[in-house]
Length: 207
Ligand code: CTP
Image (tube, rainbow, N blue to C red; front, side, top):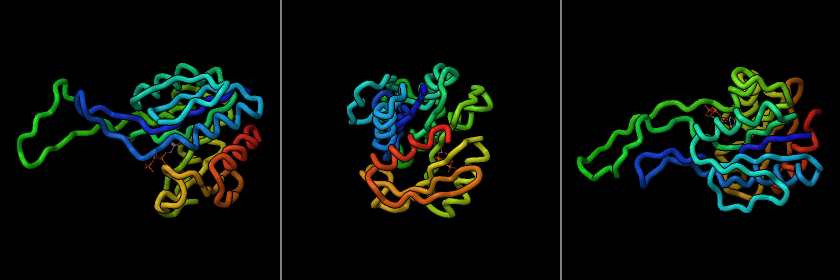
């Protein structure tokens, strides 16, 4: 099948030399792209900046901002059979990035941020995607309940929920433990290398 994967963080410009970003390494999304290619799927990886090598055989679109990621996803999603949104997209972006470098002046500096578009949340409603849709949920409390709310709100077939308050799994680590939240059931995927979780997620496409 044709599969779209988003991965990595986004970078939201503050001025020509500064940006807002997050701790996502991209490892989970890249592991999914690699596992899906090995399983015989045709993969398009749309990724924010990472230090990872693009897996062999994967089509690749590099992006920086949440807005660029939205545009790339909207352009390619309609022709896909499945999509996995593993990117850690910025929820807010500077309202008006400064054209010149912001100079040091007063003791405090306020930055006005505006909401970005929810890419996963737009997949069904705005982009009209009808294929198998997988999202991630980064949670620090009430993990299953919050993930189930995201499953319904974003009309997904599956949410992979992580406890991001733990330092041994998730952001910028090699291992992950996850709750796989389907519309009719929840499964625990015990702590294992991200590559193993990637193989499990790919095996569930279209399940
Ligand atoms: N996501 C997205 N576009 C955004 C924000 C999030 O596509 N602008 C996707 C992520 O790739 C992930 C899912 O939505 O698959 C959930 O992301 P998460 O950060 O857990 O949730 P949010 O919807 O941002 O909600 P909150 O931060 O309030 O928990």
